[in-house]
Amino acid sequence: MQKKQLAASLIFMLVLAFRATDAFAVSRSTTIRVDGMHCKMCAASVTKALKATAGVEDVQMSAEKGEAVVKFDDAKVIEAKLREVINGTGFKALDKTAVAGKSRRTKSMNARTQNTRRSPKSTS
Ligand SMILES: [Cu+2]
Image 1 (cartoon, rainbow, N blue to C red):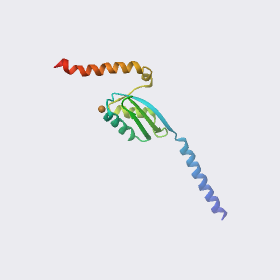
Image 2 (spheres, helix red, strand yellow):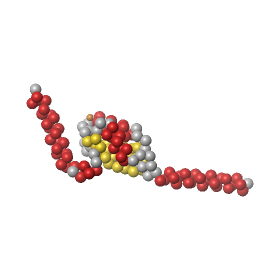
Image 3 (spheres, rainbow, N blue to C red):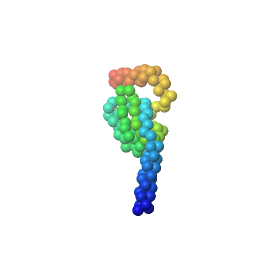
Image 4 (spheres, rainbow, N blue to C red):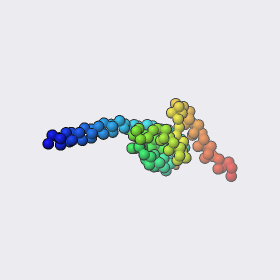
């Protein structure tokens, strides 16, 4: 009888130990600026690629802000991998240093968009 009890408590302790290991896997959230997204379809394709990545738990994408807020398990995936996945979709994950120059970048992007809109008229 006592042996059975001992075995039972051993199993119980093992289960606790596994749960403790699980606790090391921390869910993290990171915001990655994504360049080149123009509409919801762009955002959707990046979201789809990210969600298909092992370790990614949630993706909140904003095409307007050009930002992806990714919730991920940092024991399964790292941020560099998330950037790799974004780059693999044809869009560009911007470096954190690029976020510092956010306002200037937005202005130059607007200028570029206007030029693109005008170009068909001038060429025809
Ligand atoms: Cu699009």
